Amino acid sequence: MANLETFDVVVIGGGPAGATAATDLAQRGHSVALLDRAGRIKPCGGAIPPQAMLDFDIPESMLANQVNSARMVAPSERTVDMPINGGYVGMVDREHFDEWLRARAAENGALRLTGTFEEIERDTDGTAIVRYRPGPGRANGDSERVRARAVIGADGANSSVAKQCVPGSDGMKHVAAYHEIVRTPANGGAADFDGSRCDVYYQGDISPDFYGWVFPHGETTSVGVGTAVPGFSLRSACRELRRRAGLDEVETLRREGAPIPLEPLRRWDNGRDVVLAGDAAGVVAPASGEGIYYALVGGRLAAEAVTEFLASGDARALKKARRAFMKAHGKVFWVLGIMQRFWYANDKRRERFVSICEDPDVQYLTWEAYMHKRLVRARPAAHVRIFFKDLAHLLGVVSPR
Image (spheres, one colour):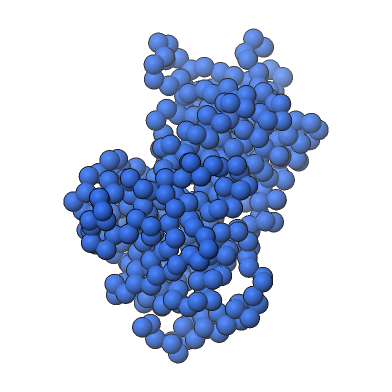
């Protein structure tokens, strides 16, 4: 198959991870093909921190909205507001944001291919051959092929690349997520709806082990739920969430569902020429479900690892993507994982969790960590106070108010 077009890298999946990897590699002068399915929109609350804007050159024009507070809703319907002092959470609509990222990759020299990944084959010399089924509009529906010196699998939590190429990927833990994009009510017409605030519902009938969200995107709003409990009706829960949020009568624009990973895979590469990025590698933060920033980071680290691999031919370079990610963010993921397993276990604990969120130290450290993507070390006394407050809640010394 020597007559097939050969690329330095074929990136499979055009979400934030894949598009970022394709952009970075193309900017370095590599020949890159970016393969993505037509019409794919991932269900997502759409939140990105200011740090993402800085690190990945995202203009404010890509934001559909900026929110300046979050409201936590407890099982008892008690609410706790968490204002963001001196900052904001950016909100994007994935339909437009992902396409902008893909277009940027193309502007930097990546070739866009539209189609569905099928399989990685091998040429006679061992070079990877990516086989894919072309997207709609192609007269010939037969599979097409391109050769690749390296492959980045960024095709989501159900990654076909991971299942075919990376040992251990079949057991990825995930929650099922579902959201509905609705028309934002004019003039805040819905009961207690605030277009500058994200609402998070910690209620067992909305989600028995995760949460429900109402995230305003300007002209539209994402209303969604997630769970890992088999048989739980996400659509019914979303319908009830819309009722509680006063959004049951507004227009529904689209509905989407997909899995959200719960923890990074233990291995991201095949030891030869394939490395994973984004949801395919499992890089969604536990407890919060935040994935866009970590997908952007994962895409960049995959590009760096592949660049070194292409230069050296040493497949061990591919392992550096996971190693670098876990060094930078592994501790945060570990802490959030513990938090999710404990505080989301039942409504009694959720009630206490929302109560803790009222604490000024918790609010300060939460927003600082979110905005700057690091554990905050500047106020050790705050960490000590939170430790004892958490201990009091765990022992039942403090009752939720």
